[in-house]
Amino acid sequence: MFFHNYVSSMTKYFLSAILFLLWLAGCSPVRPIGAFNAENTPAAPDYSNLKNWAAHPHKKDPADRVPCSGIKDEQLTAVADVFFLYPTTYTGSEKHQKMWNASTEDQKTNEKTDDTAILFQSSIFNGAGRVFAPRYRQAHIHSFYTTDKASGKQAIELAYSDIRVAFEYYLKHWNNGRPFIIAGHSQGGLHAMSLLKEVIEKSPLRKQLIVAYAVGYPIPNDFFQFLKPCQAPDETGCFCTWRTFERGYALKKAHETNVICTNPLTWTTSERQYAPQSLNKGAVVRPFCAIYPAFSDAEICKGVLMAKRPKFPGSALLRTHNYHPGDLNFYYMNIRENAQNRVKAYLMGQQTEGQKE
Image 1 (cartoon, one colour):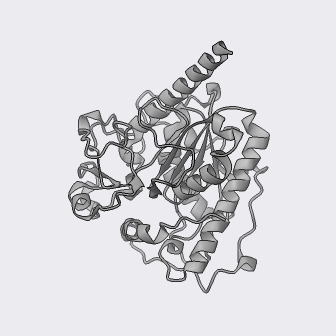
Image 2: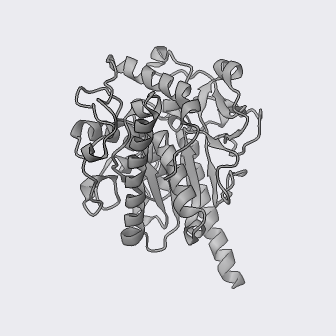
């Protein structure tokens, strides 16, 4: 089963972001006990039960909400779907988080997922399609930087196995040939990469793919055989990816010239093409019912996205140069608009193809 070779190279970036979050929470991370044991993993989720979906169009959930600005949840009339994979919320912030993988019955972790990633990230896409976000036995954050590489790999692979089952269930029961967007952040971005590579890019499903936003995890230039990075804001059948860092830090530390990075303000991969913060149509951080226009700028430098230090209520606590937790939130409104525009472009392309036939 696929496992990204870049886990170790991502560690220093990923870990610093997580440690920042744990610092805010005022706690020390709880680590998994012992080595990974396949016989001692949580029960696999049943995706016929809607409780195993953090977001689903057949129930009310935080993905249905919108910031208080007059924008609308368009899911009821959407002709496309969004399959969203949330980031790691099983971070060792609770005493019971001692397993390599979270249980989908873990109420505290589920609440944390819903109150953060589902509300603040998956809601970006409710203007473009029906949002499906499966709960999965996510790998503990320690899986990404443990010295027990075998256990970390097995934990991540178990998490991905749930993602694949959930996607196949979605296809069989709810897709009905509809075009879809794949979106994921951090651990969810890694699983999105696997899903695209193993299930979508070499199958007929590729024709249904509008766009993929696989954000927060490095994608090497040669990772996909057929899928290409998007180079225009209305291009379809392609993918977008980025990891966000404070500008000065990125200039000193960035060096990954063999990975792809998308600028979410210009929607190209052009190196050192500066996009001023005036192009930023709005971030959504906290509170949820607030949009901050011109929140930050964006510029690609050696495989990462550089952003100006933002100012917002509580930003004085932002002591990290790694803006990874805000990869999507910094550019909330731009991503929302872009997803909507790509759906329109895809449908227009399908209409043109139909006329040719």
